Every structure is written in structure tokens, then in C-alpha cells.
Image 1: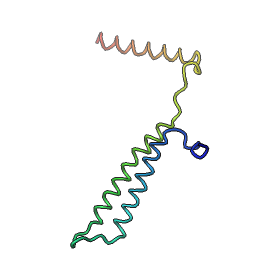
Image 2: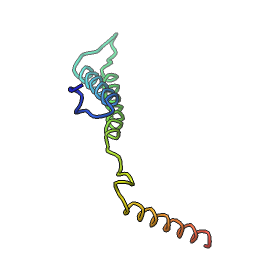
Image 3: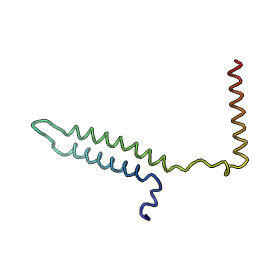
Length: 104
């Protein structure tokens, strides 16, 4: 497991993104450089478009992987007294806004 330790969490999303990138890049390159004619019809454009679509779809995998590796917010225990003061301030502010809207 020492090989994958640097990848952190969400290894499945990373594998999905890398696989789609590789398939998309291969389809793009084959579509651009290979002469793909069958009965006089050129199918290179289809591979270029599908390769671009695969690379675009891999963006979802990269976003999932990145967002899965973001460290969470600090807990209330770590914030200590400041967290409870911020909670009270937010609660009081929202109550004032609510009463202002009701009496308006």
C-alpha cells in the first residue's frame, strides 16, 4: 500500500479520471492522425469529437477526486469559545432579519 499512500483518498475517482483522459487522448490522436475511411466515408471526425467528450467527462472525475481530498472544516472543539460566539452571532443576526421581514 506504500505505492498509493500519496494519492490520499478517493482512488476510484482518480482512476476514473485518468482512464477517461487516456482513452480520450488516444481517440483524439487516432482521429487526427490515422486515415479512417470506410467505403469513402471519413470517421476521423467522430473519433475527435468522442475523444474530446471523454476528456471533458474526465473533468468530473478530477473534481470528485479533488473535492474528496479537501480537508474538512475545523470542529467546534478545535474552535473552542470562538465557535460558540460565532454561532450566537449568526443566530441573533438571522433572528433579527426574520423579525424584520415579518414586521415589514
